[in-house]
Length: 270
Ligand SMILES: Cc1cc2nc3c(=O)[nH]c(=O)nc-3n(C[C@H](O)[C@H](O)[C@H](O)COP(=O)(O)OP(=O)(O)OC[C@H]3O[C@@H](n4cnc5c(N)ncnc54)[C@H](O)[C@@H]3O)c2cc1C
Ligand code: FES
Image 1 (cartoon, rainbow, N blue to C red):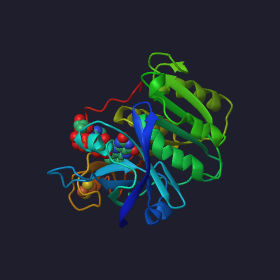
Image 2: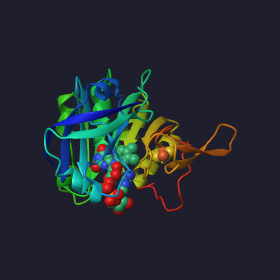
Image 3: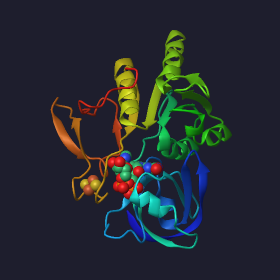
Image 4: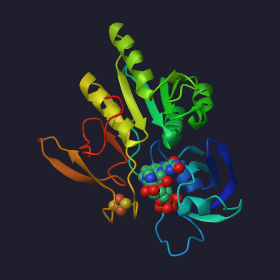
């Protein structure tokens, strides 16, 4: 983990209400693994010492990129940052996604900014697979050209039916899984990043099917480095008990079957 003064090289609207921020930051870019994140101190944010976590979308050579949406005071302030500004970044943080092994077919499942870490993952895999991505409407679907350029199959679902399958992302995934089971095709290995309902839906499917799955959790964070316990998540351990793990340090990626979901988290189309 490094703390760097990264210089903004590019900053622009990206589409779907997201903005792209590209930093010159060779030390963090060179060390970044898919699924890891950076903790960014927003310059000029009065009275706030807390950093904001963002998944690494791209890490090529000296450049590191994130995609973000304005949801509150930090991200609103970020939107005004000019090219050339120095920004303090901590990273790369977290564990990242393990690469697939054997015959398993990578099945990436994304909602919202969840496509960002999955883009980096797809670009680093030795094999291609399929991306399932969902949103409310066509305008919410980000980055599918990135995956298509890499030779991945892409399957979109929108709740209003404006693009791809009408419904949730699981409405597109479930028939695909059923067909593969019917053909006795090699098993899927899931990689999922998105809202809790989607993560839980993939968790349920992976456990039920006896398949491997990796879920990237989004928790509100404080320090980002394992010191404050703001981000803890209850997980199952091998003896049948449970323990609390820090999402910033032992996560954000957890294995399917490991998470104890809060009562409030309902799986999408379980
Ligand atoms: C590991 C990780 C990776 C992330 N990657 C990205 C990314 O690639 N792109 C992106 O746009 N966002 C990402 N986020 C979410 C991002 O960190 C928050 O949107 C951001 O911190 C909000 O800051 P703010 O000051 O604008 O919002 P605040 O003013 O602090 O809060 C505004 C609203 O946003 C909500 N909020 C704050 N933090 C989070 C959070 N972690 N998750 C969900 N809602 C939150 C608050 O509850 C509140 O409703 C990630 C979060 C984590 C934990
Ligand atoms: S955010 Fe401080 S321990 Fe995870």
